[in-house]
Amino acid sequence: MLVKDVMTKTVKTARPKTRIRDVAIVMCFNRISGLPVVEEDGSLVGVISEKDVLRAMYPKVDEALRLAQTPHFEELESEYRDVLNLHVEDLMSHRVFTVAPGDAILRAVSVMFAHKIRRIPVAVGNKLEGILSIGDVHKAIFKETFDREFGENVRPESSLEGPSSQMVS
Image (cartoon, rainbow, N blue to C red):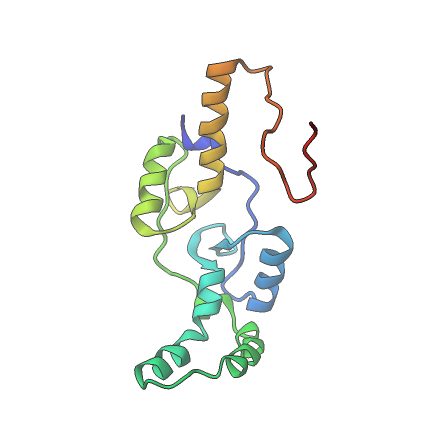
């Protein structure tokens, strides 16, 4: 299975001058944890993630822990407003790992695992073509295995019980 068969082709992106506030809104409302950062010409220049945003507050936590002091977490949370006024270029990761559309998905997974990332931009050169997440890969492999074992038209009834499910005797 190839990356191009599994990747998401419609990708939400950010620009380097985008305010973190706007990125946070996109991530929260779309339930995504990061965005590729592209220039106006579509060239990939970085990635901004929830971790990057939260890490902007960590130096103060690290310093307090080094000095064996208890950090004032409530004060740090109030400083989140200051972080929201920064720009993507202030916090983004400039080192971007990418895969190509023609790469095998397990190669992409190995790059993600090696670099401890949950999503990876798919690019040709430095032009963004899509994005691939660990969840995308998991679903694709599960579907392929299930279809091979049980046929494409067969879907099992869920045996998992959710919080509002009731068991029938």
